Length: 475
Image (cartoon, rainbow, N blue to C red):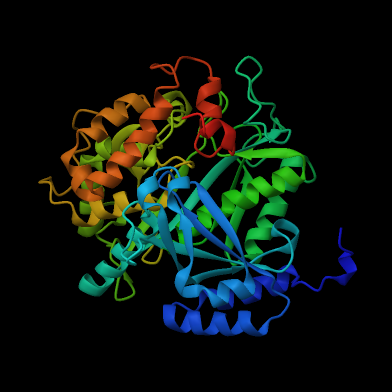
């Protein structure tokens, strides 16, 4: 092993990291960002590698470490084998290209990622550099550029991501339905001792993502024992989705370093509250929040109400995008504040959509039914495309006195509705939709048709976020 004293890799303090990351975030023009960051990487000899990230069709994060010099020399020809990624290309069309999004660059805490690395996200293209249909990061980014150019619209999002902290490393891979998970804390909402394991984990994670430029807002233990939530500020939707994937990665790494597991299974434990990813969304035009109307009902404009109505009308068809796993349907249990009712409310937390108390700056809608294990790019693409573009005839506002409807109760029901929907075919394209459905069916077929009263091993072990290459190769 090389003597560590011989290495001179970049290691910045958390204060230095936060400053450099916030400065990088201010570079929103892709051309200027590329020029600036290529110059930096060329001149900074202590950077050894560039970590390039992308997401597959289910939302699983993939990472490639490139030697810095090779990366700079090969920028226009970064390729990978798409046939090795679930839901991507077939063997006969395996080569895909990575196109770097320089506005996404992130300087990394060395105690989490190792010294001398920076990270960027990439969009995926075919051999001819056309955007790849199964890459929903690229599709979301293209859609955002299109509505800004044609209509002057910008979309912003802030997620509230809940997770659980479990005892032991690789607790998901070692799950036994007879034993269940071993929780590290029995505290409750806002309640954990200052230096207990859950609080130390939250503090370490919050410090790391703050250094990564997240602009933290608050963090706390959640309602269920051993449950946590760390909130960060509003930003444009593509960056917010990037942050979701990196946030979960940091949580898992910090937990592993502490000899534990951070999991984002929506309902890993029966008889306690599950985990959601309440998704706060707003639209802006010419710098003005167009969801706000001081005189509108619940402070929401006509545009805001139309956005809500369109999503509620398509809720059953969209459900597989925002609740994409077998386990996520356990969370939609009305006994535990579950948002399974297809309705909107300012107060009822069982509603799919809530209208938070807000002012002109903060007016938004909160889609509460989104699970933390969904593909955030795909989920936001579906929600925004529906809320902005859907032309399904509908009343101006949802009738709160109408017969109450509920989201599908199992992934099987959700797949059936999604699969037969002409709307989702037109929105996603038949090929991308078919690939997504195929993987959902594969997992659903490995689980009982009905959820039952206990968490089953298959819904944990075959969950798309569990890192187990051997297991995935079995189907």
